[in-house]
Image 1 (cartoon, rainbow over the protein chains, first blue to last red):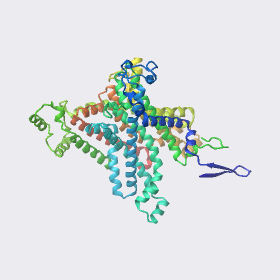
Image 2: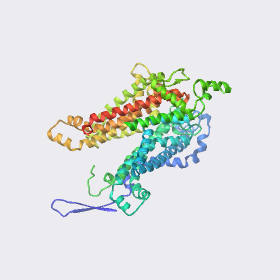
Image 3: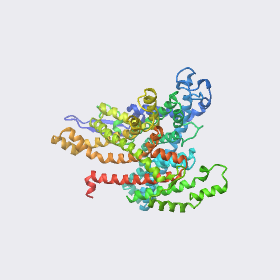
Image 4: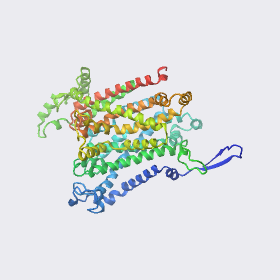
Length: 312
Length: 298
């Protein structure tokens, strides 16, 4: 898709600037921070996918000579970040732990987006009563502090991974619900929806083919920022001992375990937390880039213009 | 307002029945080899042998009289225990929110004043970082640096000196501060590019007044909304901070009671917290009316 813009210059013939719609990697390259964030997240994805297969043995391999080893090169390249009380390589455990930490957060956010988005579309498009009931349910969930709710529910049921995901997804669903409903309420007044209805389309058809594609970019942007929040929540819960249980590895749990050795082996608690922070930070940075890139009105900030001064 | 009350009542009901569903409390309080008779006696004594809905009716009746149940583990009325824990959390939350709002408004307003300037970039990056940092990790790193290595501050505990407050409040402050700076910056950017600010400047109003009187007042509505949400979320953060720093507040009380299966305290704490949140929403609604004259005249 090319856009043609004309800029009138005083007295001379009008100059014509032809801009091609730019591929997303060019948009990404313009924002250096978002680049770094994307690269880091790719590294994490790599760890997530093949980390445990590649390093599973190293992560559980006891090496009592490396008990609480300080970060350094003494015990070999794997122990560059130090060793835990049983001598296991901290680096290996971090990479293997990425899978639990990230996949729990990712699954929870995905479920929340799907359920919240669907309910939001229903609430926005179907009749008043349905909308009311759904919104009240969302209020119940949203009005209480989420961590506290998670603590309560997870101790009522047992702290299994499945329950953890459900609880996290439930606490985040209302956000997607509200945003979707607000957007649907606005979109359904537009002309093309009317036209579609005049042609005889059913509600489901309209929701799926016309409304959903418009709501999707917003939801995607929210999902990125939400992923960060859910990661922090899951880490907090694991830290309190109510999230993922040992012997499964997750970064929050590693911080809790490292807390006992704070004076002797500070790296045990420091590096897992640092990993959490980098992952969250990358997600947040990428999300603000996404907000600009998916909004046609704001996209110009990320595009390269030839013969034009960078306008900020 | 009616909607909030329905929501919160629903919550209290849900937690009550969820707690009863999880299992037999007699397993927790009596030794494993207690025989059936003792279990039945125990259940009868504390009303666990009644069907759940009867227990619930009893509970609701109790609320009217100010009796929110009796803590089995602590052998005291749950209401008293919860009420004792609240001031700690309230002090923490109040101090933190005041600091968050004052600092975030200052920083955010200054950042919005010169968008893309040095201050703005630094503020944006640091606010993004603080909003992304896991609070328990920052707390532990803080203890590591300031208590263990430098020995400037105590590791934990709640005492009289200000040194006991510095780390808990700073840690609790980080996330709301980070978020709030971005919110303030965004709304101030909007306000500063608006027509009324242009008019004020054209009139020759002093720049400082333009920022703090004209622009800020209009940005305040969004800021208050976010601040209200954050105050409720403060209870979340307080759970972690109170656990790491050992402050006997409501967050720590709830986590401990949930782990110890002390239903009465969990119940009482949720009821009181839910009512407090309900009151907070009412206050925020009133604040809206006070801040935005357009709402008043509707």
